[in-house]
Amino acid sequence: MPCHSARQLPVAFPSVLEQSLESIWYDSFGFNRYRGYDWMPEPCRSCDEKEKDFGGCRCQAFMLTGSADNADPVCSKSPHHHKILEARREAACSDIKVSPAAVPQPYPLAAYLQNPGTVMTLATRTVTLPGGLQATLVHQPQADRAAALVRVAAGSHHEPSCFPRSGAPAGTPAVLRR
Image (cartoon, rainbow, N blue to C red; front, side, top):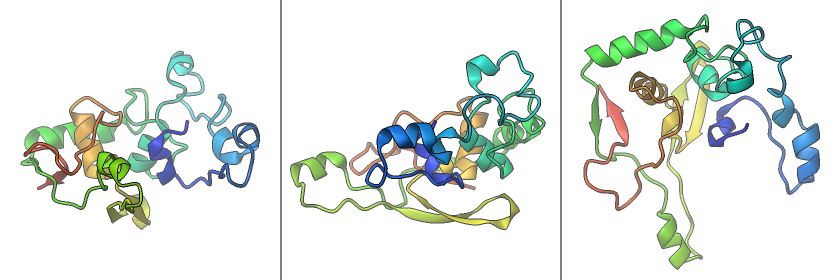
């Protein structure tokens, strides 16, 4: 903790421009909120797997249940696991199509490295989270609930190893549509 997706959590992470790395790591709320076992809800706190999975993914719990404090829905012991089962059924029975990139993509890193003065821009989108909370995401397709559910339904709950970018082969998945 935290991974790249942690920026979507409602937790403030301090900047190394304002605090030392040591202070951030050991003293900040953002880096200590989910350390240890005291924060864990049941069934995580008494689970014999907690030493291996540390309570699961906080970002997944947040995006799929509305609270990062909840048990990760991917775990079969989670009281929220039904959301994953429903997503798998929905994905298996739906007409979800994967289409080529249709949203603005980040400026290609290779092009930036060749022209360091170029400004790298990111795509943004606004999504509605559980409970009606609006959030603006900065080019985080894995944070989109539909994308997260389809990935989980496909058997992976981790970030994809690569994201489509300008110049990607035709048909590279980027946007999910119904």
